[in-house]
Length: 274
Image 1 (tube, helix red, strand yellow):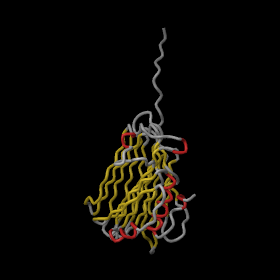
Image 2: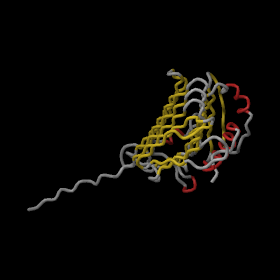
Image 3: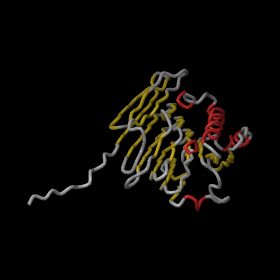
Image 4: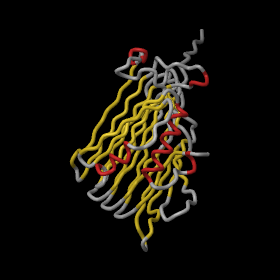
C-alpha cells in the first residue's frame, strides 16, 4: 500500500532592503550610495530646488505575517534630503507571525533629513512590528512623521483582532535623547476609552529634533485646527513632539499636509498629494 504524506504549503514571504546615502559635492547634496534588494525599491524623482528627494516602494503591494523590510538613510555632513513612500503601506491579515519593518536613519553634523512616509493602514487580523533607530549628530536636524490608520472606514471595517508594536530610539552623539514605544494587542475594543483611543480611527506622531526645536513650539501651537482632528505639541531637550488623533484618515492627512508644509517651509513631496 502506497502512502503519500502531504505537508502544508510554505507561504512565500516578502523581503526587501533599501539603503540610500547622500553627501555634499561642490556645494550641492548628491546621491552617494543606493542599494536595493528584494521587494523594496527606491526612486529619485526630479524635484525643484536644490534638495534631492527619494521615494521608497514596496513592490509586494503590502505586508503580511513573516514579511521583513529594512530601510536605511545616511546623510553626510551638511547634506539635506527628503525621503517619502510612494503610497500608504498596508498590513494585511497574518496567517502566522508578524511583519517587521526596521528603519535606520543616520545624520552627520549639519545634515537635515525629512523622513515622511505616508500612512500605514492596519487591516483586521494584521500583525506588524516596527522599529526606528536614529543617530543625529550635533547641529543636524530631523523631521519625521509616522501616521497610522486603524482599518478601512469606507469598507465598514472595525479593528479588533490585531497586533501592533512601534519602537523609536533617537540618539545624539551616542546618548539616548528620545525613546518611545507603543503597543496595541487584541481585543482593541478595550482601548476604546476616553483615556486611550476613544473613537479615533487614525493617529500620528511628528518628531522634530534640531537645535531650534524648542523655539518652534509657539508657532506649532498656533497652527490651524481641522474638524475631526485633535493635536497637541510639547518641546523639551532639543526636540519637539506633536501627537494627533483623528476620527478618520482623510482629515488627519489634510492636517498633516498643512502642518508639515508649514514646518518644512516647502510643499510636501508630490507623492503625498497625488
